[in-house]
Length: 274
Image (cartoon, rainbow, N blue to C red; front, side, top):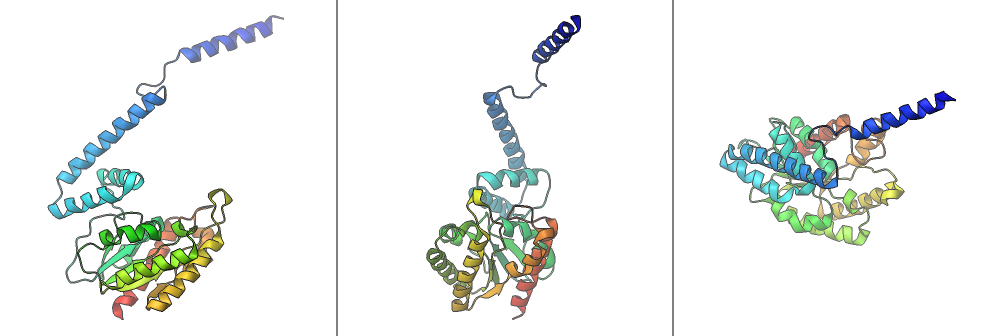
């Protein structure tokens, strides 16, 4: 009869001991402290980033200012952490070689993912820039395109809108694409449309694989009407989704982005030769 009592007493003493153990030094104990710690971490990161920016030449500082104004609350902290850590990313400042053509990539996070692989594929052949944000849907493109185009001359513009437009009515999607194409063609650049890469069915996110097929079909009509070349990323990547696309996700692993970057690079190089 004593064993149950001893067991209970031992359990109680352990529980009391656990309650009396203070949290690790510096670890938040409630939501308010966690918020305070997060704000302090953000200030520390920003201070380190601003110190890094202060050492840059004026043209690179100007580019960082553009990124600060456009990357947004999700991508800007990521960019800051990578720059403070000395890492390269899709939004690196591109120092143009004046002897090479200038290329602009416009697109969402999938485009961001293949940007560096595209630069590698076109090393020594083109100066590859990208728009200073996740370009999102066509509605955002109409608002921000002039910012993305900037003041420089472009030889090739490779662009895509689709995943963020999966719920946009097809008529609106086509109309916005037409406006974007017409504006890009006015730059004198060779314009390339990248078909939108596949997405999985996901009822929780209200997304269907068919929505991308429908939008690629609509986009193909717009591009045909305006004489815009197509880089068919959808067809290129589809046979490799099992090994290249992240499970239950629209994004890709490193192998997938390398594959897409090679495809994009080949498409741009072909356009430059025409």
